[in-house]
Image (cartoon, rainbow, N blue to C red; front, side):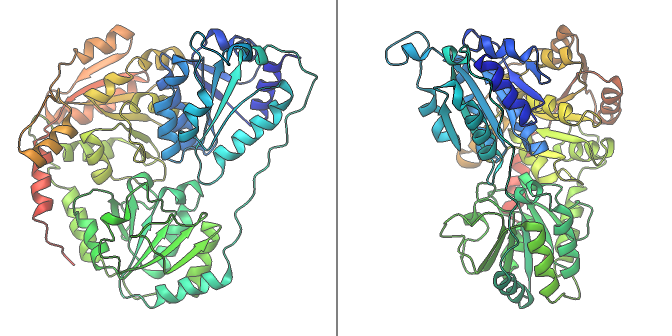
Length: 544
């Protein structure tokens, strides 16, 4: 059998459903072997789009998303999406064709040392140098990509190795270790610290979602009456509507939810990763007791020194700590939650146009079902999505906050629809982020996928403008021109709508979902609210 056929068998053995990518000369044998495979190849319009699709697919399913490129520029185009997955802890396996091993030792057309290129942004990077090692390489790549903390594995596959003949071999058995139950002495230490706390608070990170422990987290919080804040990447881990929810934390500026951390004496970090929200922003004084509950030991950081670390199965750890901890009569942060909820209602009935960000958040919540999925691109809108969108389920508001790369929105919505075809998949994107990978509209249409693309249009790099105005009181080189987004959508064969009043947004969103195709919505946004928010938070007085 051909080496490439064995390679594809090994991918099938790992449960791969989709490979996102672009065919090339150096992956010809792999592409040919896919014709007889159950794996569905999704031909994208750019390798970055392929990597972002694999990234979001991995984050939503917990199974490694797979992307494929050819050598040289094809491989380098994967880099941004691969880095995003690696820092957002999304399992991903990236595969790149490579020139024949007979020309890797010298200057040669499109040859780069891809293993060394991908090594700093991967958990594992290797080259297949002999066909016989394929089962081991593929098994290791998927095992490491999926194990905590998840991330990227990279496989460099030279064309002469892919085309070589090999004795029939079997893929290796898929195995994964279950995280152990945390040690009893650590459970008891944590229970003692929490029982003695006057104002404990929970910081839930994306690790809770990855561990499938959201229900246990909510039960733990309810049993002990402890308020919960989530990181941007863990939105929905507790429903925003829950009386113990304080929403999301993650702004560099002091926000209402920050008041809870300022008052807390014990901070229980569950499934938290410092890449999500650095502790120097919420633990400036370094005088609070930190309880770390996670599958992995804590990162070393001067602002994140632990009182106790509970390492192992998160769900089991929470259950056992809860059993040994004294419950409190009431939630100490009721007034803080009331303030946060009231603030989310700001501009709910506004008819101002361009539309205010706060109203867009509320209108999206009215239209979408709790299980529907929003992919936030990166830009000023991301800060509003992270802070104000009321997520009710885990993994229904996907925010890139580790690497935080623009351009993830449209490819991410495609991946979301492939992973969960029964749900509405919508991306909230800025006009700048949209144009970075808008070519993937054609991919969605070709696949027959229905996605909604809501563009916040201001013809500027709005987030950079926000920072420039805060720091210098003036702007520099942030303006650009946009195409007619409605005509642009229609040129692909998609539908396009333009929001022309605040009252338009809800009916347009509902129509876009009902259209059951790719729909682009051009929504002018009032980003003057950015600086108003900055001023408001600068004058914030904590309600607790």
